[in-house]
Amino acid sequence: MTTSEQAAPKENLVMEHLVSLHYSEELTPILERYVDALIDGRIVGHKCPQCSRVYVPGKGYCPICVVPTSEKDEVEVSDHGTVTGFTIITPVAYYGQEETEPFVYASVLLDGASGNLGGQDVVGIPRDQVHSGLRVRAIWKPKDQRTGEGVSNRGWGSVASVIDAFEPTGEPDMERSKYEEHIF
Amino acid sequence: MPATDIAVVGYAQTRSVRRARESEVQLLVPTVATALERAGLDRREVGFTCAGSCDYLTGGPFAFVSNLEAAGAWPPISESHVEMDGAWALYEAWVRLQHGDIDTALVFGSGKSSPSDPAEVWAQQLDPYYLAPLGVDPVSLAGLQARALIDAGKATERDFAEVVARSRRAAKDNANAQVSGDVDVDPLLQEPYVRAPLRRADLPPISDGAVAVVLARGDRARALSKRPAWIRGLDHRIEVHQPGMRDLTVSSSTTLAARKAGYDGGPLDVVELSATFSPQELILRDALGLGADAVVNPSGGPLAANPVMATGLVRIVEVAQRISEGGARRGLAHATGGQVLQHNLVCLMEGD
Image 1: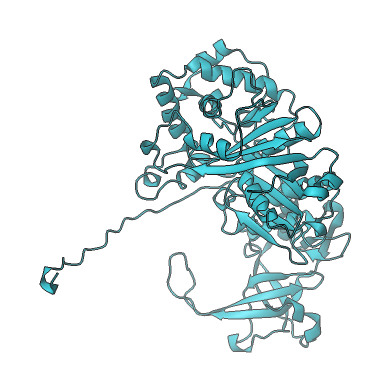
Image 2: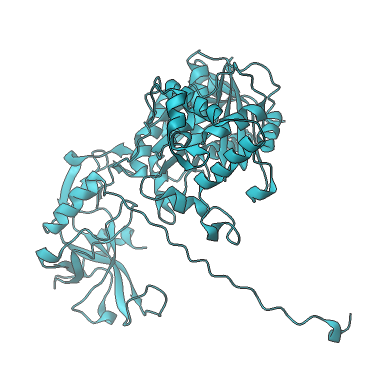
C-alpha cells in the first residue's frame, strides 16, 4: 500500500457519559455524638481500652487492636495542636475547585489525639512560614453557623463546617520527637 | 488437580436489615471476630485475608480499604480484595491456599445497599456505550429474563409465586432473614407488577449485612473443627456481557461451573442458590439438573435477605453450617455476579 492509498485518519468518536449517583444516610450514632459535640465547641473521640490510642472521630472499634469501642470510651481532645505536615496548594481550575489563591493544607495533631486532623487551613501567618512543629489552635465558626455538613460515615470527612481554620498560638514549636511519627 | 482438603472451619453473618445505623466496618468487626472465634483461630495466625465489597455501593473510592480494619491489618498482613461478592474472595483465598505454604485464610463480604438507589448504582456495571447510558436497572433486566422464561413456555407466574412462598416460609427458621412468613400463592398473584411479569415479592429485599468465613487446609482444618465442611470443588464461569446475546432462560455458565467443580448429579442434602429474583431459581435448578425434591434455599435465600456483596458467600456459609452441624453431608452453594446470572460460581462441599 502506498502512502497516497492510506485512509485519512478517522476522527475519534467521543461520547459523554456523566454519571451522578445519590447517597443518603443517617450518620452512625457515634458520629452523631461527634457532630453534636462539634456544634457545642468540643472535639471528642474514642480511646481504645487496650492500647489507649485516641481516634477522632471514634470509629466504634480500634483498628490496631480490633476491639470494639463505645460511648464509655469517649474522650474529649483539645482544640490546640501541632502542625505535623503541610502542603502549599496552588489551585488550578478544575471541575469542583473553588479556591483561586494558594492555600495551606496542613495536618494537625490535636493535643490528646493519636492521629492527624487532615486538610486544615492555617491562617494568621505568612504561608512560607508555616512549618512542622508549629503550635496552632482552632478558629471556630460562631456557634449558630456550625453544622455537621462534611462529616461522613465513610471514614473521611472534614470539620470545615465548624472550624474555619487554625492559627498560631505563639507557643514555642513542639519538640520534633513528640510528633515525628505523624509526619507523612 | 486442585487440593480438595480445604474446608470451611468458621463462619458468622449479621442479620440482614433494611438499614443498618452502623458503618460497614462496624458490621464487619464483630462478624469477623465471631468467625475467627468459632474457628478457634487468633487473627495473627491467619495466612491470607481476602474481602469482597463494592465501592459504588458504599459511595466512595477506596471504601474497601477501611473494611480491612475489621481484620486487623497491623502489623501488616497478606491480603487482597475483589470488587465482587465475597464468594469470589473465597475463591481467591482457596486458590491462594493451593500454594501450600499457608494453611489458613480469612474471607469476608459486606455491603450496605441502604444509602444508595440500587437501580442507579447497578446500571453502572453495564457496558458504558450501549447499556449504562440507558440506565437499565437490575429489576428491568430480571423482568426481561422472566418474560423470556414465560414466552419459552418454561415457567408461569404461578411458578414464580411458588418460589416466593416457599422461600419466605423457609426464612421463618432463619434468624438472619429480613423477609419471612407464611404467604399463599393466590394472593401473591393478585399483587400489582413492579416490572411485568415481576411483582414486588419476586424481587429481593434491599439489605445491609456482612458475612465472614475461615478456611483451613488438611490437618489444620481437622484440628480447628470437629466437622469441617470440605470444599470438594469450586469453579466459576462467565458468559457474554450483553444480555441480548445469550439465552436468558438458561444458565450454561452455572452448568459448566458445576461440572468443573466436580458435581456429578449425585444426591445433595442442601442447595443454596443466589437466585436474586424468583424466576432465577427455576433457571438455576434446571442448570444444575436438580429434581423437584431437592432442598433448595432452606435459609430462604436472597428473596429473604440480600446483603449484596455478601449474598453469595452467605450461600456458602448456609451450606457449610448445615454440614458442620451435622444436618447435611453433601451440599452445593451457588453465587452470582453481573446482570441476570452472567457470572456464576459453584462450590461443592462435603462433611467427612
